[in-house]
Image (cartoon, rainbow, N blue to C red):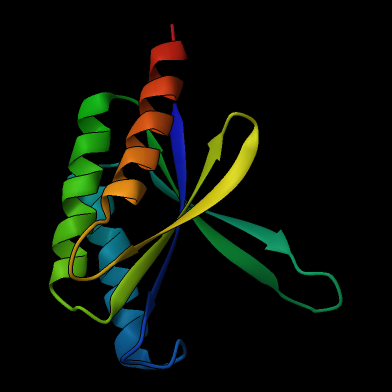
Amino acid sequence: MFELVLAPGTASFDPEDDRWRQQVSLLFTNLDAEVGGVRREFTTVAGTKGSAASVILALGSAGAFTAALQFFRAWLDRDKSRHLEVGIDVDGRHERIVLRGGGLSEQAFETLVTAAATRLAAEP
């Protein structure tokens, strides 16, 4: 299983703007419908009464990974002000990659593909 931690952002809206919240909600709803494996995890934030939500995308095959990348590209291309921070574990360390509207950089793409291929190849 290969997991991605997803954090969408935009330069067009405040993170608390209802229009942006609706776009993010649709992103995760549609991603789960198209690719599957979307879940939310909540962690308590020290010094506050609340918790922080993380959205995790669990991918179990190369096909699911390819479908997720295609979905990310389509979502980002619809609004060039969007970006998607993707957290991944690579060789025991956590890395964050930022995918931006207007195109997926070759370096970001290569990092994601290498990490996914390594993790999925290790699965029995």
